[in-house]
Image 1 (cartoon, rainbow, N blue to C red):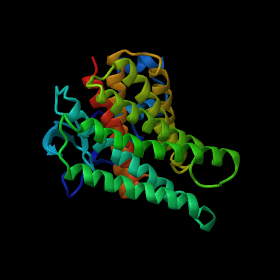
Image 2: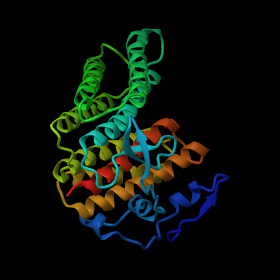
Image 3: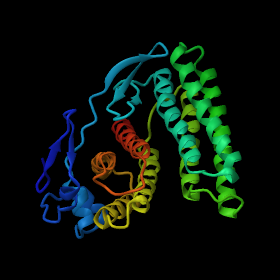
Image 4: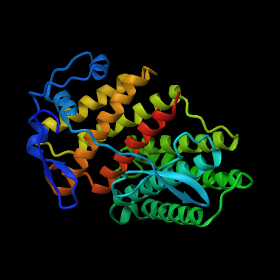
Length: 320
C-alpha cells in the first residue's frame, strides 16, 4: 500500500482503491524522477493521484499453446493479454500472439461502434459494425482451431491483414461521415481515427512478421503507444462525470505526460509512464465496475484500454 492510499478487499481477493482514497492523495510524497523529468513539475492533485496509486502487477507470463504454437498470457482482467513467450524471436509465435491480442481489440472496436450508433437512422453503419464483430469472432475461433507453422503462417497472416483492411476502410468512411455531418453517432471522429491507426499498425506488424522479423523497435514502440495512451487519457477525461474533477485532472495530466513522451525514445521514462498508466487504469476500471467512480465509461471499454496499456509495457520490455 502506497503512502496515503488505503484499499478494501473484494471477495475475489483483489484490492480496490476506494473512490474517497483515490482522490485524497494531495499529500503523497513519493515522486517519480522520470515522470517529473517529462512534465517539468509535480504540482496539482492530478499528478498526486497518478503518483499515489498502488502498483498494479500484470505478470508473470503464463505459458499456453494456441494453434499448436507456444504463446504467453498476461493478467488481462476480463480477458487475458496474449504475448509471445519471453525472449522469443519466432515470427510464428509472435503472429499467433499478435493476432490473438489485436483481433480481440478490433472485434471490440466494432462492438463499441455498434453500441454508440443507436436508433433506426444508424441501422446501416451499425449493421456493418456488427458484421465486423462477428467476422473477427469467427476469425479468432478459426485461428484457435488451426495449426500455424513456418510453412503456412504468412498465408494466415495475409488473411488477417485482408480482414483488418476492410475494417480500416470502414473506420475511414465513418470518420469522414461523422466529420462531414452525414451521420450523427456517439462515436467521436478521434475514436474512429484512433482505432484505425491501431489497425494499420497491426497490419504493418504482420507484414513485418511475414518477412521473418519479430523484433520490436523502441523508436517505434514508444511514439506509437505514447500517442495511444494520450488519447485514452483524453477519452477518459471526457467520459467521466463532470463532478469527478480530481480524476478528470488526473486524466488530463496523464494526457500531457504522454504527449511529451512522444518526443523521446528514452526507455526509462517510458517504462515509468507505462506502469503509471497501468496503475491508473486498473484503479479506474475497478471503480467503474463497482460504481465508486461516476462516469459513462462501459466496463468493457475500461478493460479494453487497460489491456492496451499492459501490451505497451510488454512491447517496451522487449524493445532494445
